[in-house]
Length: 496
Image 1 (tube, one colour):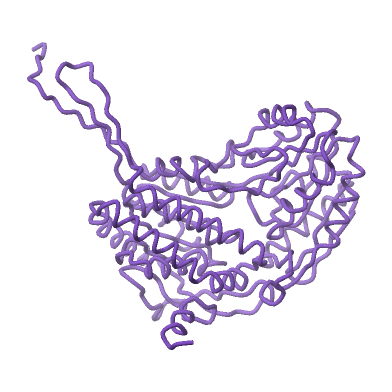
Image 2 (image 1 turned 45 degrees about the vertical axis):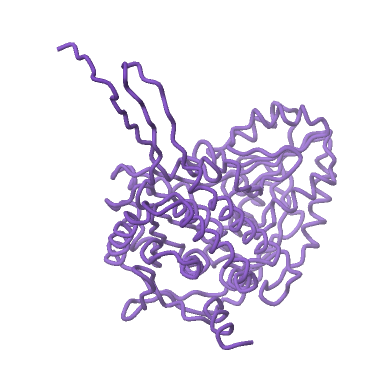
């Protein structure tokens, strides 16, 4: 390996120096306090990042605002080339990125591949945005007038991203925002400040993005979160996280008339009708529940199963859960179930399990944990009111709830404040689609599970699950502003 290649690899490894912010280029942490970042599998600290301050946030916005004015005037080709450069960098650094995801976020190989592919997919889609910012022409009711509707960058987009799919859920906002002529102030989750923030800065740095267009402030949300969301210079605030926190972020954004783009919590139902292929439904239910230990907003939170196939479904799901390989993703490429992100999440998940058993559910599989490794858990005899069902448990937990007919299935599915993602399994596809149409969710998948994300279709939820949509032309509209320009080409007659 050449020295330059080794140096490039070192920049993307867990052992690299990550004690930096990105303002007008990389800025060393210097005398700032630091945040320890641990490997959730080993619980050992592997690096530290700066604990950003309110002053850092202000500087990030100042730099971003200055850089954005010039960036908005660049040609579509120039912006496309930068986005394509980021895509190429991700492809070239694929193994290093997968290693970072494993070490920092506890991502198994299959989850890491899913995440990286999703991040690359939205980046590829965003590369087309500079030439898709089309306007419109409308006839006027006024003689001799021309109406032109232009589409312009919003300005500075604030991105506050979560720890569960840190690379993708940051990139799905960052790449479209930059492609449409905006600058970005990015605040990653403190559990995953590298893969959710600093890694993206290095990717775009290598792609040739001018300094100041992507600023990254790592830090605790309690210290800098409100300032990020409520800053006067934010035109759009993109947030992914819990509904409780998102409500506050949206309020901060709206207080300064910034557009809130919120993807929030979920409580996804997986509805299995009596004519479903049970084996197929179990396969989908296993993947949709246990991928990334259930730490996904669109994962299956409740299994709603027709009473005629209920026992068979429970038995087969429990068998699958008991046989899923558990391991440290950094050491075991065959591991399917990795660690939970931190101790507080482990406590929440195990409490939900314990409470649900106390409430009358039967533990069919799992239920225990070893450090941050929580066993894949199946709970039968569950009801919608039980702890693991009515809450977004965000863990490898499958409460299985029986229903008697389609009406009850829809009623149970909708009996939640959330409306993000859902799935329906049935042999009669028309009937299954009819059930899907009656479920109040932004995304419903028939004869599949709900963990789906494609860069050209709208991603988002109803009710307490969010505001707005990501992907495709929907996110393009989120990050741009329509502007009406009228041109009076002939002298106008006024009434006075």
